[in-house]
Length: 313
Image (cartoon, rainbow, N blue to C red; front, side, top):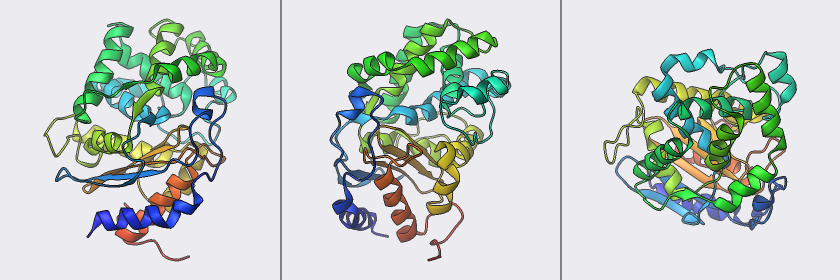
């Protein structure tokens, strides 16, 4: 299978639709991004990356970071993490306060904002904010094989300045006794985590562990156990796109995680990790063009986890 040809043809087929969708405007730093940016990268276990478009330009990965935070939290907490956060699709908006209050401060899953705040709190643990931030960056730099991966401080500041809803969620969690650390300390890590700046190429390479039982097949570095990688993939498939997760599974068939910066990370177990980026979003906050690109790749490769090319109907 010539993956480079598939990626190039997919990019060319969709290039005229660059700018489709609506970029996130509630975070000022994201509203300023060129909406015509579009990149596709597929990282494979032989160390190659098939790429097209804006694959080497860093962007704010936003909620895609929750995948890496979850891996770190599971490493520290093990199965005890599931006492603090659930594993079910939310069916509601990613920042719903009503659902959190109704369910007594236990978030539905680690990928909605309240669940990610709890996950961030758990990987901070008792070691403090600075150590947690260093650990996250160190892991991503090693998994992405790039020491330049870092946070975008302008985006982090913009996140904090526009973060009233996330603060409300965090204070609800604290009121129910779900946080181990002070609210503002947890949020300071959470906002920087969401402001991680990576390119499609770096993101795909960093996520190979998801497709290969917790280890990077290129370097042998382990991010998590095989069983935890499987569980993270399951949560990505069920919950990775909020109330659009079912539609994404229906159309694409990969475990995936979207971010409002326009990125989507997809894991194809046993085969590859894929990252796409296009800032225009659909109503659920998933990249409109990025999801179409992944559906096209699934069709051309037959890589859906449900096996075989998707039927025409």
